[in-house]
Image (cartoon, rainbow, N blue to C red; front, side):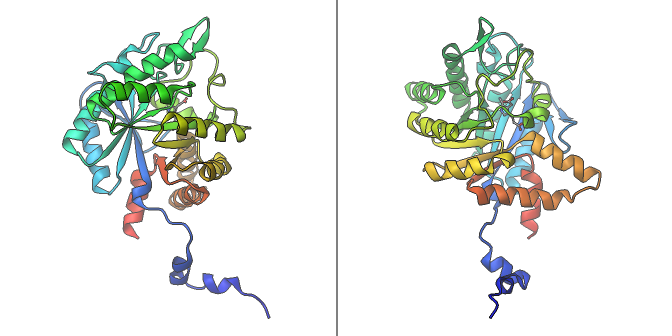
Length: 322
Ligand code: PBG
């Protein structure tokens, strides 16, 4: 007798019945870039289909995402001015703060998350305050906490620190609690590697470091035990959700962190991962839509509950058609 696993693959309906992993539009979080100005929707060349919005146009984009059933957005800001300490990052009238306010007043049900980091706001492009040529961990924590409070004040549901400073989840939690934002959550970029896959993002957010690199604070991509250590620490410091980033070269990390952590786990399908699919699709070398769904499914199969992806809108359209 031959055991015939192929019986379960015989028809589309059978395959659907026994499928182990599905993605839903409810798993998706759409990253969005917001800049100063009015009526702007400037294309990001290395990320076809992605734009830098101004506060007015980002609201219409959020409405479209909401209508497609996408539950959440993650906002990144491009300030008008940069300085050594990233002081625009915590201005009450900063672009992110205004975008949060505008989106939440139009769409109260939309979950609004904000990236908390300094690299978009500093003239040197590093994720923290520089002292003696190095990013100073503890001096950075104060600025991150101020930024988080300003986002919470504007109405953000979750703040998402992406800087990889030690102790920032605890510092932000304490600052939120002592400023009456006990209900504002923290989605921590707990496991963030120093990755070349962030290339297109740094163009999109104008946040490339002007000297050196981020290897002194972001993780070495050769390590996985360290990922578990970072995840456990952030859980203990009070994170509500944690993230692994990037996603596709790190599926093993997602699986390992999933096993160790009881919190909802997000994975960030980053800009370089998006750009590669778009570039190959444009040349007709791959079917971009099929590769998109296969990639997103693999991220969920690895153990992610939520996926931050520039494909959110496109994937939502495909999933709605099914
Ligand atoms: C830092 C930040 C980065 C990304 C998200 N937050 C860039 C970096 O660490 O250099 C990358 C996201 C992507 O590549 O899509 N604020």
